[in-house]
Image (cartoon, rainbow, N blue to C red; front, side, top):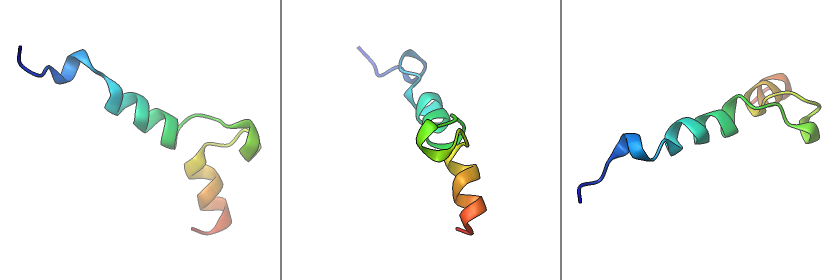
Length: 40
């Protein structure tokens, strides 16, 4: 059985989780928004 990239859509989820999801611990900002506001 060959590896099927579309069968495991983890890249999209990881991108969402690391860059776009609002997090309560960050004041409901996305991780990227929080880091940008801190000057990183």
